[in-house]
Image (cartoon, rainbow, N blue to C red; front, side, top):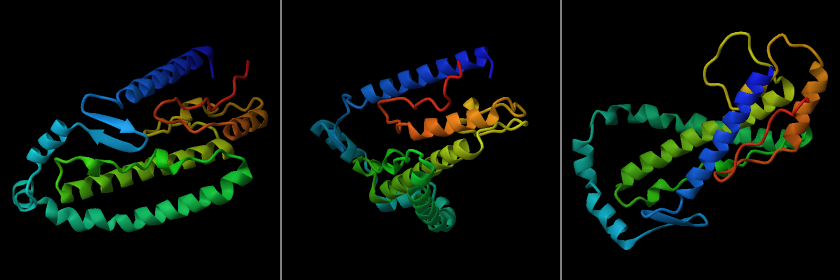
Length: 211
């Protein structure tokens, strides 16, 4: 990896850290406040939310009733999602200690808090939390598979691919064989020393500095 790419990656990491800090600063806003994991709205905000809540039967008829046709397909995905959650969590619990990989914190990815929004009726809350579970779970699984890939094969592809995880750009270039096994061991050691990023911090460096 040449110096220019390293500089760009360093800038990306710095901007990511700045973004996370800005998002964390917004956790206390005029609309709501966080006390640990508890969310508190001002009384006037809560009252306004209640006024906006739609009656369930009105919502059912007025808000895209055609969505009911796809409901069985959407919620049928709950079965494979829960199985995926279970299998991947067991895999991490069983194998990551053996590999000496820092574990991914599930609670950092799967968060249920939209049900606290007073302007949503009970069905809208259910939809929101289902989406939160699905997208959070996939992000959680992606991070576990990314750490696994970094441990076993931190090598880029020859072809351009979409949807790469945040570790991919620091992987070894395709066909670059110089000191491969030594660098592979460095990637593995970085995983052992890693700390899980949170909303108030940045992701840790996934490639040791070779200089």
